[in-house]
Image (cartoon, rainbow, N blue to C red; front, side, top):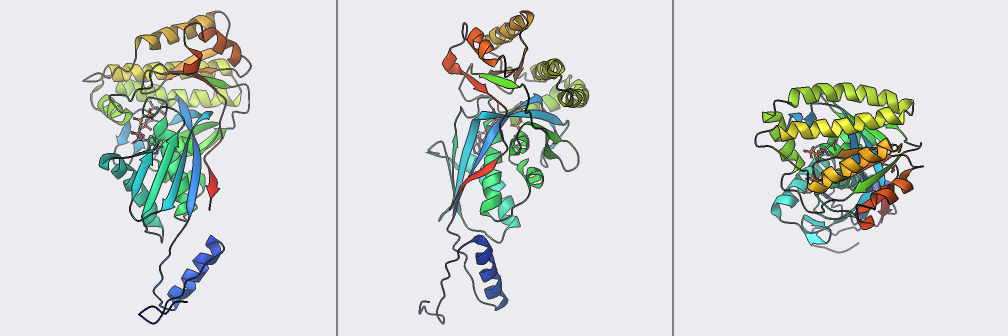
Length: 357
Ligand code: ADP
Ligand code: DP6
């Protein structure tokens, strides 16, 4: 207790969140003025995911409603760690650099959705680290917003289950909904889109990420998909084919039919890129090395290896292959691509809290 001006003040140190919430409730019931000092710090980790059937285009941009459902594989070696802690002012630090107004605004608009659902309204510092290049077509927005949503869900004491959390996570980034889960994950389109784990991917699956450029892309995926929806004559064909690809890939995954999964994966990426290349103005992420890697994958396939390529909004290529063949394919690829620019990944887990105090 202190003897502060307005009749004194009690400071309660609580052992856990549950007792703290109970103390606050009882004091508020007594019409006391209560300030939650909220001195805690939460760190969450989320892994990147690579879509096999891509999400490309929003029906309703404000409400982040996708035109088509998508399906991805969560990767173990690419991840984001995000810490939220109590602070005097809102601050966003990404990879050790304090972010400017525009970047912070995007993140805190997202955080406000959690504040609205919570009793807690205090300011926070967000410190986030991506262990791979940011905004280069390697899905940093996916792991970034999934880690942020997971940390905020706990920090603001909302504790939604992952499926319900995915409903909010989409406002950070559509693909982030899928990084909440491990294995093969579907982001289901609809009035209220949500994500769920479709298959644990606990079978002979692996992916090699081939980094062709680590530079920040000139056109963000948000802008590229907006342009495609608005002006590409191929967009309606994209939506139609994505819908049928989703149904076919789901069936193929359930029967562990790798060849069909691979064929759908490769054509989904190529059709997505075809649709954006036909936009006005066109979006072309490919670089000469992108084509070189695509051709290498094709030639490895003709030698009998099971491998298929996919690409996101950027020049980098990801190779879907078998865990049992991944090392051999990595060695073969290294004849053309520096080993330091390739990462072997296996299916990864869903987002989790890794530290709390
Ligand atoms: P990428 O291909 O890497 O997903 P995008 O252009 O789709 O590239 O998204 C990059 C954007 O995602 C960044 O500009 C930033 O707004 C956001 N982002 C990336 N990493 C994080 C992070 N760790 N925490 C919050 N937001 C992030
Ligand atoms: C090519 O999820 O980054 O990676 O919802 O506008 O943030 P916003 O888009 P984002 O787009 C991902 C596009 C993609 C395909 C995919 O991951 O499904």
